[in-house]
Length: 380
View 1 (cartoon, rainbow, N blue to C red):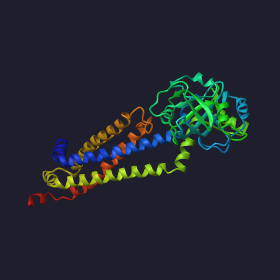
View 2 (cartoon, helix red, strand yellow; view 1 turned 180 degrees about the vertical axis):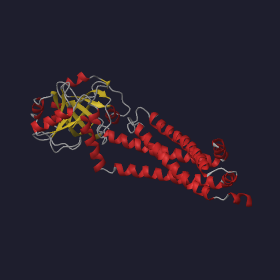
View 3 (cartoon, helix red, strand yellow; view 1 turned 30 degrees about the vertical axis):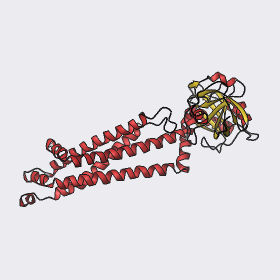
View 4 (cartoon, rainbow, N blue to C red; view 1 turned 135 degrees about the vertical axis):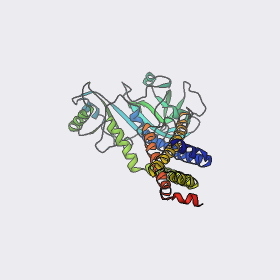
């Protein structure tokens, strides 16, 4: 019977292509939008992603995400270092800064000030220059996207300068850092230099980054830091999750993408359901003839399931392939989509949605098959 079911499906090429393309379009739309949504959420924690060596992020008790910062005293770094289980701790400065190029281009970006000695916080992958160049006077490192935006079409060369809040800064390198959610411009420099580029008042310290001793549990050490210092200590995964949760709860991004995904599901159900129902209607005589020959409703259900599964697998595969190709062939110099990819969780979710769409379409069509009287086929 499976062969008969496939012959009926492939025999009506128009309906078959409509069903496959309906599933493929729904799969492409949902996978693409969900992947971009996940990518944007991941970008909100870009600074956390770029410092994988750190186990614990320590901040003011009122801070629960990467972008809402309440400065602390510089002495808090020493207090964290004295907590049992902490191997080392370094300061991190983060603030917004105004940028002016020699050509008069104005922009704003994230200024990241890292520990003057260890330089923990600067991404390791340098496209130009080296990490040690940051020890030079007035030296800064730009992210790849920052350099392309501030100096479009220009190659990196020694001696390039910009102004940060009207103070001179010399560009000594370009690094491949993660893109931030709010902008592509990220500037790295030493902590002592970063505090000179800004005027945040008496307290300057944004975060304390800590590494736990070998064998210690980050969660336990974080709890101990909170008890001893009164500050708020997050493990790296906790702080990343907290930052993403803030974006989800306080922006319209989830609603925007949620509406698109919902519409993709509705479109898939509507197109595939109506087309599959029309396919059943146009082949109702064949189903009636099979019932007249003694084929049970159970067998007809299996035949319809085979047809639905065939359409679902082929359509899902095509849509998933196009979605994956969309992210795979993104130009390497594209700032908008760099770092976006198709997560396995999105593929699994879309597989479940495809099964749901095909089941609903199959159920709607089977109602007509079950109600048909075989005698009607011979009367007409």
